[in-house]
Every structure is written in structure tokens, then in C-alpha cells.
Amino acid sequence: MNSNQVPAIFKAYDIRGLVDNEITPDFTFSTGVAFARFLQLEREPATVVIGEDMRPSSPVLADAFSAGVTSQGMDVTRIGLASTDMLYFASGKLNLPGAMFTASHNPAEYNGIKLCLSGARPIGKESGLLTIENFVRHGSPMQIRSMGIEKNREMLSEYVDYLRSLVDLSEMRSLKIVVDAGNGMAGYTAPAIFEGLNVDLIPLYFELDGSFPNHEANPIDAKNLKDLQKAVKKHKADLGLAFDGDADRCFLVDENGETVNPSDLTSLIAARELVRVPGATIIYNLISSRTVLEVIQENGGKGLRSRVGHSYIKKMMADSGAIFGGEHSGHFYFKDFWRADSGALAALHAIAALGSSKNSISKLLKPYQRYYASGEINSTVSDAPSEMKKIEDKYISQPGVELDHLDGLTVNGDTWWFNLRSSNTEPLLRLNVEASTQARMEKVRDEVLRAIKGK
Image (cartoon, rainbow, N blue to C red; front, side):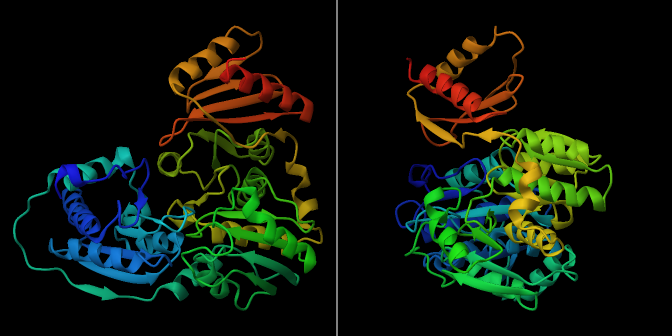
């Protein structure tokens, strides 16, 4: 493609944009060519595995991408409908590079591509995506060679068997669970995952529909959990699970219909994994609750703090040998799952813990609820760096306060902390605050927001 025709849709971790306007079959064909060129430079296996979500545009875009890959002499294995973690499973199991066609939780008019190397190793801006973007913009001339071959392979049953081999679900009491798939890919994977378990499954919006007629498939936004909360209370269920559009993220609702802080689930899984592998390393991102590190240390593990973003966590897992990583955004990473994130595997851990306990999920998680959090608060700013500097100057000289710049600005006090990060894609500052009391959290939150607004 001509450089001027390439839209600015290459993000930090993936490719994402508007269908027909920014992401077109011509664009994905060129991206397939560029990806093949990149893989050849990296001496990767000469076959690409491709999965797609339920958006109407996904098969057409995946067809064009596949044609681009095979035009360069590389083969393609199509696994058809898949969650993103199912694509990671295929990449890991087959040891092949992969491409997943999805826009995750974005609205219906979007689509995108998530790329990985063999073994589900991540590709981000710093680890190949910029090279691929440059090939799309400026071309990647190659020798003429014979066309590659495309074939299809069904992998849902293998994916389900592998997930269930990683969690002991044999000794669990009967549970009633509501699952909200949001018309996304969990509607395809969840029935197979739950089949044969001692679970009364109550499906909510399992119909695959890329127009998302009921609510956005974005469970980090509280309004998209309301139907699940109502259904859990109505059916007197033990647990509610919500997945995003490509089902790589999982959020919990307890038996009272209350949403569960993702850091609570990180703590629960960390404690479980440290029983299995004593003394292991576990990663948490820097907007996770302080509880997470406390739980890791209380259970004899070593905690490592990461920047926000899957490529950072996956690299740190590879470098450190960590067995598990949790992000406050609902992404959970497992060494035994090729260090990739899987909402389904996180859900199975929660189900196994609940099913083997006589307690409710709220009682099971209560020991991990030690602090009060603001949630992420976005502020529109015209100059993010200067605003960050202003906040830093305000706190740097305060006694007993420590600052760091691992990701944006983190300010640590004795009983409180906050992190302020700029968005990669929008003129926004993202604020997260946590403290030992609600009053202290609100005081710190309001102080920072007033300073951002210049008051």
C-alpha cells in the first residue's frame, strides 16, 4: 500500500480501527504480506495460525490477510471462530506464529488484529509491530516464490481439554453460575468449557452477534455488568462471570450481585499457585492493589511489579520464570499457558476455589479486601507531560512520600498511593488511587484531580 493510504491504527500492542474506513481487505492483505516478511526475517516457522471473532467483518478480513501470507510462500492454518486465548493456545500448542482478528471490547464498527510469534510470544510496538507497520507503509519486496497452502483445523476441543488439565476440578460441590458472554466469543467457548462440570450454567447473551445488541462487551465498564448482577441475584447463583468480546478478560460478580475487584482475583489465584509451586515468582501490574504483593509475600512467594500492558508482563514472565501474572484490567497470565492471558483459565481457578470450599465467593475473597480504591478516573488534558510534572512537583518534597516512574508517575505514601499515566491513544490522564480508609482515598483522589484541573 502507498504510505499515505495507511491509517494510523498500529497501536502499542495490536492493530485496531474502523471497518471499511481504516481496516479494509486491501489493508489486511498488505499486513499479511508484511507479517510474512517479518516472520521470515525472524526465522519463524513458515506457517501462520489464524483465528477470528464473531464480528461480521472478521472472516473477510482474515481471508485477505491469509491471501497476503500465502502470497509470500508461507502456509496458513485457519482455526475459524476463536477467543483470543484460544488463538494463543493454538500458537503455543502448534508452536506457530499467529494472528487473531478481533477488536476485543471495542464497539461493533471496529475490528483489529492481534499478532504473536510462535509459542504465543507477544508482538508489540517494540518487539516487531513497528517493523510490520513500516513494511505496510513502504513495502516489503521479496523474491517471487510458490504460493503457500491454506488449511483448516478445529481446535476447540483441544483447547478445552488443555484448560481443564491445568486446574483440578474433580472435587467440587455443585455450583450455579451465570455467564455473561456479551454476545462475544465466550458464547462459543463457554458451553464447551463447562460441559461435564458440576455446574448449573445460566447463559446470558451467548448468541454470537458482532453488533452487540444488549450491551458493549466491555466488562471493565460498570454499566455493562448490570444485567449479570441482576441475573445472579434473580437465580440465587453462587457466582457471575463476565467476559469481554474476545473472551481473554474475565470479571467476577459475587453471590450478592457485587462486582469483584480484579486484584482480589489476582490474590486468590496467586495464593493457589503458590501452594502448587512454593516460593515461585508472581507478577502484578502497578495499578494492582497493595494487597496483591502482601498476599504473595504472606504465601512465601516473590512479587515483581510490572508496567501496564501484556507485552511488558509477558516479557517479565519470560525473564523471571514467574508462574502467574495479574493485571487490574482483568487480564491473567499463566506460565503453563505459554505465559499468555486467558479469561477462561482465570475463571476456572475461581470456580475450583469456590467449588472446593464451603464458603461463598464473597467470604472466600474477603481476606483480600484490605484497601479502598478509586477505580480508574480519566481527565482530559491538553498537555499530559506538563500536567504530570505539575503533580510530581506537588508531591516530591512531601515527607514520607516516595515517587517512581516505572509507568507514568506513582506516588507512595504511608497508607495510600496513586498512579497517574497518560493514554497511548487519547489526550487523557488516567488516575488510580488506593488507601487504607475510604476517607483517605477520597482526600488523595480529590487533591490530585483538583491539581490536574488547576484549582
